[in-house]
Structures are given as C-alpha cells and as structure tokens.
Length: 103
Image (cartoon, rainbow, N blue to C red):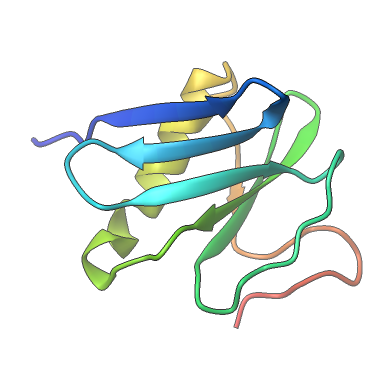
C-alpha cells in the first residue's frame, strides 16, 4: 500500500495559518482556524471542515488538480494526527449556522 508523505509549512506570525503540502503530488491545502479569522471560500477550490482540540478548522485546496482531489481527505487526516486529534470528523459543509454549504 502506498502512502503519501505530507509536509507542513507554518506561519510564525499566525499559528493557525498552516499549509499542508504533499511531497509526491501537487496537492496543497490551506488551513484556517475559523474561531480566530474570517474565511471566504473560493468557488474553484475544495473546502472541508473539522473540529479539533476545541477549534473549528476550514481546509481549502490551493490550485487543485483533478488527480489530487482524492488525496484531500487523507491529507486532512494526516493534519488531524499532527495536531493530536486523530478522531477529527471531516465535514463537507461549514457547520456554523447560515454559512457556506457544499454544492
């Protein structure tokens, strides 16, 4: 079984602004902490959401390619392990009332 290897770019000025990179593909995912910052979804990208360690996260792809779309959930699961919250439930819609719904 092949496993993707993921790397994390962090912003030293904003601990909630991480970017997940796949070492073996072009997949990149921006992480947002919705409790601390505004988030405007890009209609050309994939957005998923999850709760972990008492925070609500949004995950948005960066320049997604069709070949990489199947790896998005695996990358988010890797990130959940990284933040010590492996039981994170990954959601297709923003769970905040009145917010963005997946189409």
